[in-house]
Image (cartoon, rainbow, N blue to C red; front, side, top):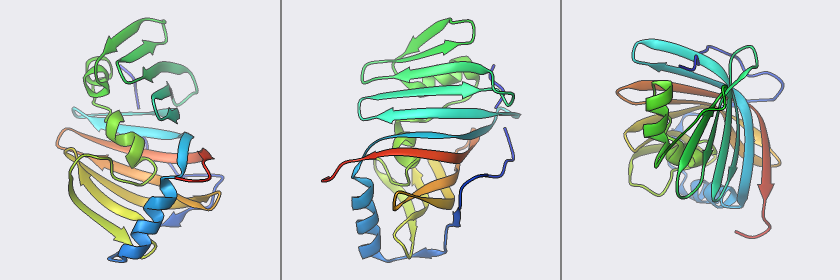
Length: 198
């Protein structure tokens, strides 16, 4: 079982608290268009989870590409305890003893091995501050067109802070909640690849 819940403060990057919700549709569309230029990204930060009455904390390094995700999860002391590799066909989790377990979806795999569900399919979009392609239950946006909250796939996502990376506003503090778990993602570093046309 991976131990993963924290109360941490972002360090080493300037953050911008998410302003109050607004209905600036033009700014919203412009921001979403800007996000469409991202081809891949790497984020590094802290991950915290409350699930089944227990708290877990650790670090995360996540490299996302359109057809592949590779996630390393570390203890608070920096030891790697799991790697999650996902493509269009399957998801494989490899633990510190190099034992591998596969499944068709991340939620089933992480619940079986870690004790909590990681919504990786949605999180790859939610992490950069945009809804995915499934139906949106509710959403709110600030005057700059950035998401402040989103309800999707049974998760309530709150964007508490943003940071500027190469002229693009990206989240630096995100909280995700559903009826079984609470997940905090505190992003300390972004590396992004941007194409010239969407």
